[in-house]
Amino acid sequence: MDLFLFHQSIHSSAEVSYSRSGGPGGQNVNKVNTKVQLRLGLSRLEGLSEAEMLRIRVVLASRITTGDELIIDSSEERSQRTNLERAYSRMEALIAAAARLPKHRRPTKPTRASREKRLQTKHIHGQKKSGRKIRSIEE
Image (cartoon, rainbow, N blue to C red):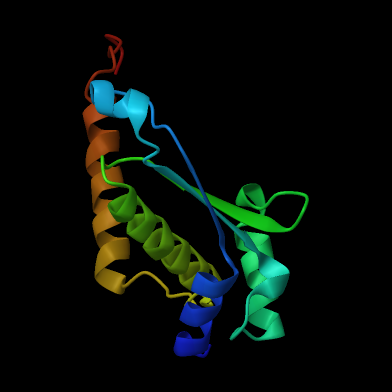
């Protein structure tokens, strides 16, 4: 992944639209378009290999529209500029995390001590339950 090319392609090809935010904020909410929506066509994204692009499409499938666009909204702050910066950083982080291959897990076996500890707890638990039994007089 070429980070500089990747960063530049997001900033150059993402479409930005603004609207009014909901929630508290007084008259500011009713007057100022502070909510930011970023739309990025994945076909216009540069700096990623085919394998990384395929992985992004699989991992972020629920966030991608039928028009092959990734959409990010940001309306947490009262400032349009801050919301725009947050949306860009969130989009970059999402794409970078989705493109990264997960670390290969090597299956491990339980240690001898952990197996013995498990058997010991099972034995104690069984004794506890057997101590609750009602014994007949003949025994």
